[in-house]
Length: 291
Length: 256
Image 1: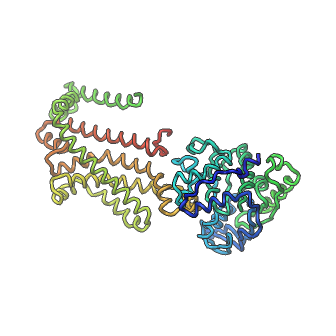
Image 2: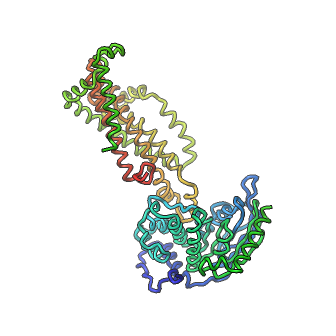
Image 3: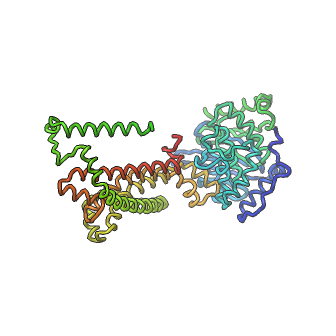
């Protein structure tokens, strides 16, 4: 199974007619995945981050460091400011207090340029075919439709979506739609992925499948990622590290190192000794925080 | 075929009842239906056939006015809606004016426009465009604003410029709304044409109606009205068909 997600040795390199340098850069990044293992060094540094909407304090003095290629899961009760955190990191919201440095840069525009945000709902555009949805970022950077499709095409094969390139989103299942949304996020070519409850809208069985799929995809693509979820198991299974947040205003309660490796069959992973004890500790921290 | 059955049945039933009312003396007297005021449908049908050349000639004039005025309104309305959408300040400034412009009775405006623009097609175009402009603009503006804010956030993290958000997200979202506005507009456009022709013209269905009713040729008057309705219904149906083809993701798409 794993091999599906490794770079095909002789991946045809599209004749680089790409006038747009961004498109070319993107290709380099895709080509480099897997080949370049996680290098350590801070990819993302959050220091003393606080945020409030009017009188409502949402986040309180949060510190978080992510090294290159690290996946950090963030769990917390509903409405504890997890999504706000992602919007702050992604440069969609201006910070009020504290700093967020992504790859050393801490202006909102720089963060916007470094982060790709995957929202809870797939938000696929109904009027575009699956491949055009996935390639949106390439189009935004000036690639022609044909060029964008050519660049997106290999990913459809690599991520088990071959044959669905031309399908309209309405004709696809929830799991398929979520995979395309993830490809769209990957194809943005950003070093940091922000995943906001990516599977919350799926049924339990599909969600388990998608978690396994994403674990493999993350192993193959090696990106720094923040995964926000309210599902402790999902966070532990998909992340290197899990941060448990308290109820609003969110403060970090505890930090757990997730048992590795994450690419073993999900069922084996989630039933292992290390996993269940980590889950118990996370749940205990959550219920403490809720009190 | 099945889709056409209900409207045809309703029309047939109404015409049948009308025919009976006009023909049966008892009912006609009770309702004070005078033959020179309200002709029977069969008489109208007769007039439709006898005056077919006259009706066709004038219908062509009116159709041209309606199509040109409608096209003008759609172009101006969409352009105006985009400008107002992109600038909240302009939107706040112009929106009340846009609504107020609709309260000016066209019958008041029509003679003034004729004085300004003469007896040609000019004033008719302006009147039709004025009537059509409002539904097109308001609907398009609503459609452009109906975009899911999460979608805009997502596009921003995918490096979209303001223009790309407009083109790839807002415009496709607004398209079904534009069609809703255009369908309302095309139905009322024929009324605009009639007002325009009444204010001063030498041809067109409105002109024909004016002349025929002055001469108490009510069968001809109603025949002209029937043609006018047929024009509106046909244009509406054509727009609806076009909508199913090019705005198929909207509420009136083939799957919905």
